[in-house]
Amino acid sequence: MVAPQVEVGDYVAVYLEKYDPEQPQIGKTTSISSMDETVNIDWYMGCYSGSWKVCMIGRGITRKVWNESVPFTAILRSIQFTKSMKLYKDTVLALKNKYPGLC
Image 1 (cartoon, helix red, strand yellow):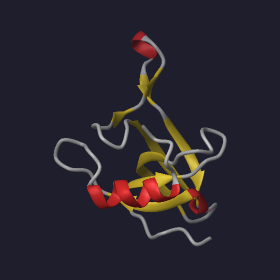
Image 2: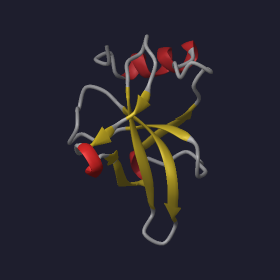
Image 3: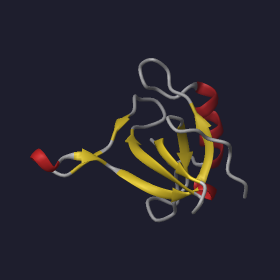
Image 4: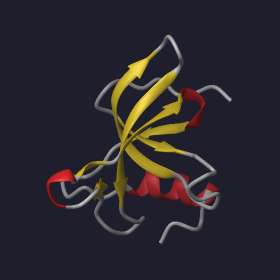
């Protein structure tokens, strides 16, 4: 599988079986390493019909954005959000075709 072209700051749909084999994950690219073919992702949480927000981990002063490095090949496609951070209908349809499990 060839990963789509992405740039730092792009929102992407990612598939990592370790999180949920039934649905893709959504994130924002924060850095790209061509040397080891990975992309750093800030994870987002939400659902097909609702708005998305950045996923935080930790408590109190240790609270931070959940960020992870994933291989290029895990990226399914670049996506865009509306101004209210909702998925566009064409993105929803494309993802639902492949992954019906996301709320």
